[in-house]
Image (tube, rainbow, N blue to C red):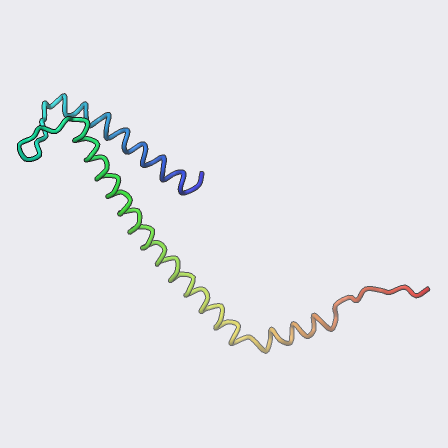
Length: 113
């Protein structure tokens, strides 16, 4: 499953669970949500809170991905620098090995008619 498909399914599941559990909880606890002096319907109250939760989840996902992306980038930099140091130290050995390999490589036999 691709990352984007997983993200969309997670968002839909979050919205659905928030709606189902939220309306049930509001009815069970007899909670009324007011904005100013106006009573907000339970469905609107839950939908607004669900959208806020989804936005918070997306923001947290962006932060987590940027942190892990930075860690992966730093790890690749360290591995690359170690590889460059190894090539820098052992370049004469690698050059001699490459020359020997080219000199002793089997050449294809040509047939003359």
